Length: 116
Length: 114
Image (cartoon, rainbow over the protein chains, first blue to last red):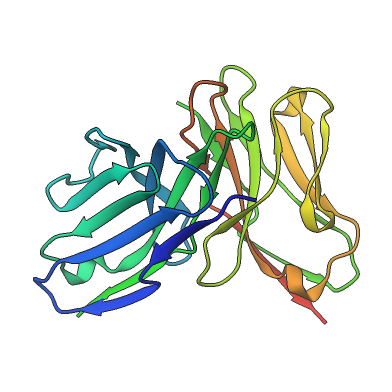
């Protein structure tokens, strides 16, 4: 099946710094990628939808200036958490839309962010 | 708005026993339905999906799910659970063709007793 990678898998940063998370589709072109946030023992909450070459669409309540999303190519989307604070600590998961007849989202392994 | 309910937060079964995880959805039409599995600290892996046709869907790792329109349900089953099946299971729905946004249930954690 299609493979989606995320980097880094785990990051610890100081409060006030910015952190970039990369999401790559390794063997298919993804015109659309999604970013989710998952709190401990919770479900996945969609943060934003990222379309290649255009601005991301953010879900209600998600600060677009804090969570910057860039989808510059068909295989790469990045999420930058700007001026991170401890409440931003979470598990961030990306997914990519594969249109190879599967009509299925393929998920990355996730990035654990801890802000001290 | 569509919603997904997984009534069971945590289920414990013995290895070798059968398993059924419940999922109910609320949506005006028949959505596309999915089951994903998440191991600790990992992303999600697709187990199976239903778009149309045969209401009994076979997936990977010996899982199957049955779509019941009258009950708005899409329950996941496995006849004999293995210790490696211990994980979090998420049911998800999508409105249908042309829409790719998923709505997830809160998940069911499966523990397996050796």
